[in-house]
Image (cartoon, rainbow, N blue to C red; front, top):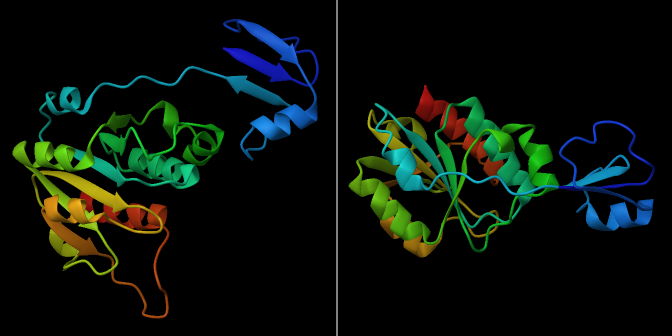
Length: 207
């Protein structure tokens, strides 16, 4: 790894390949709006197993969260933290059209980015097909879903699909899921933030 600092780093040099002294302007431009407090670190991305390897563990009851092209790294980080809190087995995102792990995501995840598997797949619709073939009940969360989330509880394995911040679930995703679910909210409130909705849905599903 490399570390960029605006003054000499005198301690904890173990496992650091090089230290580069620079100024605040460089840090501000490269920290992606995440508070850097004068230090920035370049690290290698975490490597997780493929989805199939987790399925092969054959637990009595498994739960995954699938992200249908979410674009806000802070939302993804918050979902990782929530998934960790509710003992989710992994969060699944597409390799394309989903941001890579970064400082904003890590900050929102509050440590969960190191412990909650973020599993990258090529095609989400094929992933849903694979999960259904392996006895998963796949719930797509939508504002106008067909069922109250409370009525979608199943004792089998579960996958919760969350749509993007602006467009929700894509058409092909809707065609693949087992059912669509909604969280009833006051009519005065247009919608919930996707990470907040994930927290409510996972509380219901996992309890």
